Image 1: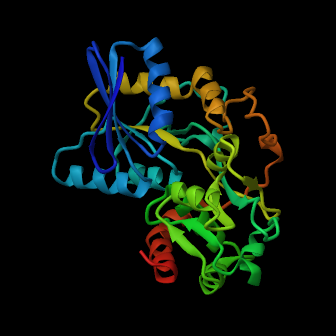
Image 2: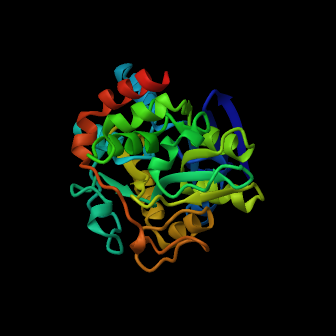
Length: 323
């Protein structure tokens, strides 16, 4: 029987009774989705009890660093939004290499060459539009700068969201956009929400006409009957692959390896499709209504560059839109 109990702000423990092993997962994936993930995992690994801490990637990494500084790390697994945070953790020597991970059906670009972290799904960031709005449907990132969009744009903050860190850092690194793009957004009275959920809710309720958001949240909201539509901008989308990794400080590395194996399995990839994610495993079809991943235009940025300018990205964003 699955039990979910809230222990503190952002902290949730999901536990299955009568297990011999315990695994602590720090994740940015929504709790309702992780509940289903754990249930599927326990079908093949019933002896492992999974506990969760769920929050935004930035808060997760801050919590982890504080625990390490205190000499009391609690996490076995990281399952977070972006590869920048994972790369930083790897560079600090925090991640365990797992060369036996089952990656034969994955493109090498989707996992760390040193086998310390592995992408689990493709998540793109584009524009959500309230179809009940009298404003025009957008087709370009530049549409958010138009006079009619003044005060009608909301986006997640990189101070909280890992996907937003990638999105803001990637656009800021492009000559076509740069920080001038965000300065213009600020002058057009764009607003920052704490995370993608706040963007989804504001646009779904009609408080804002346009939002910058990860695609699955928009598709999920549309499936629930909300008047929203997701747009893949013509310039391209930014993307993350929600990597999973085992911490060197893991108290239960054997169980952690089983969880990574599961995340890379066909069963987990097919489940991610039901949760409205693009799969990364070769041969698994995307959710109904999604474009073929091969046709997506993804705006690329060097992960090492994004890591180098990570603090600058957050500081500049806060200067424009507040903390």
